[in-house]
Length: 177
Image 1 (cartoon, rainbow, N blue to C red):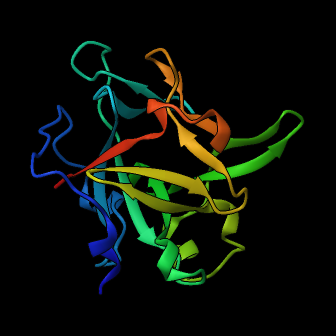
Image 2 (cartoon, rainbow, N blue to C red; image 1 turned 90 degrees about the horizontal axis):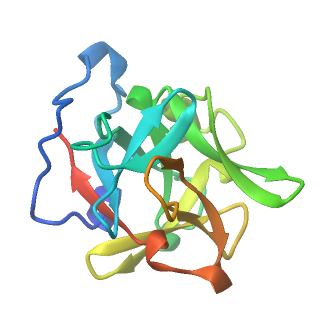
């Protein structure tokens, strides 16, 4: 089964204000797929400065970010490991250790380099867990920690422990063209 079949994509398709990126800015690998990712309240992930935030593109004066997704071929495929890239795959979401525990940050690492195995990639990897039409994304480097949206719009995405799971850990992937 090809890796892209692992992604759960609802039948509906989003038409964001930002309909396309320049081809030169997109990942050149043919298996790369782009998605608009939304939380359970239909708030989309978007970029503002160096942060990946959650908000409503229609009311928060933002554009839904097209997230580039490629598989991590170096980890157990049965766990559906993926890399998440922003800005055409030029920056990737990474899990880092901070004083208060694991945290998310965007790093200037090209998703194609991660896919090709150019750098230690576990901290850039998320395992997908299907929940019907929704997905939870578990940090490969920190088992039991999941990508989570904030409780209020216009705040950055983060990580939360499995024991603190809420509706904000469920995300919906809508393929973006």
